[in-house]
Length: 375
Image (cartoon, rainbow, N blue to C red; front, side, top):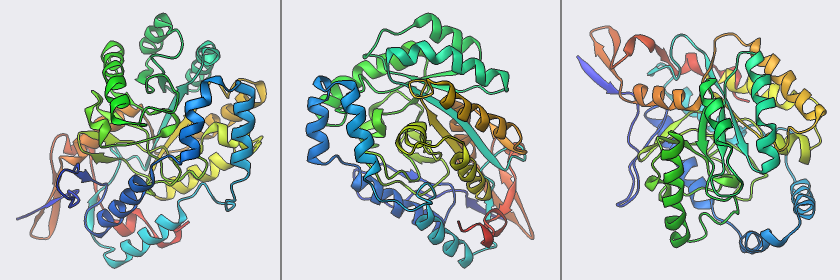
């Protein structure tokens, strides 16, 4: 009888955190390469560093004008929201060992996972939370709400009510000023207050404002998972992306990358009036048995037109079969469970060991990723 690990610790130099990705072998090596590239590139230019220092004194309308102008000046391909470079390399890797046995990413016969999250950035956004939550509930969804603990007055009654209704509460940085990772001194000071908020809200998750990220520093957070990475997003101040469309483990944290374009990008920057890009990306993620994790903001879903686009997409989600609609804390918990499983080869058969292995199933890499799903 032979035992195979379902994931592998990526070999890292001394002092670096261990990484474990969704699939072992060559696929793990590829995901590590893309993660390293993103980690190396996840730094702010001097222009952005100066912008965030002066940002508190810049009027909000002028900030938004600057952001729209900058984003619209970025030259991107029509399929900018698809991680095409990664998926081409990934499918090439799969073709080298198509019969490799792996544990399916998702439990209970689900083909993919869908996860709704919201970043609440302003007082105005707080006032729009209940309307958005009610819309989701009428369609059978629950979501995660990321509140900023030291920017606006927290509505503890609203937070408790959301939790009672089955939603999840997470912590969104410290004060959303773009300077959380400016220096280790600033981060260490703010980390104490962030951890206090995590404990107060009984939160499992964290997301850094503006999806700035330094996963090594973030190991000091009292969180079970982080959701500050993404597969691809050329419009962020720290652009780049890890390519991978599945969760992974970075040190003590389960990392849940967002894989759906943000609402601000679609509705504000690009002026989309339909959910067509969300629908196209969802189909792509489904082809790859991946995770569709969304970031939207009540601050930007603040008009009837914007809310209509979101509502149309949620109704499209309702039509998806074999899609696991889960809170991020549920996905993180499952990912830890899956990570602890092993594949045992005994004679001509294979079995999964671990708890609860009955929710998992074996498949081959070629079954998960057929050649016609290259993107």
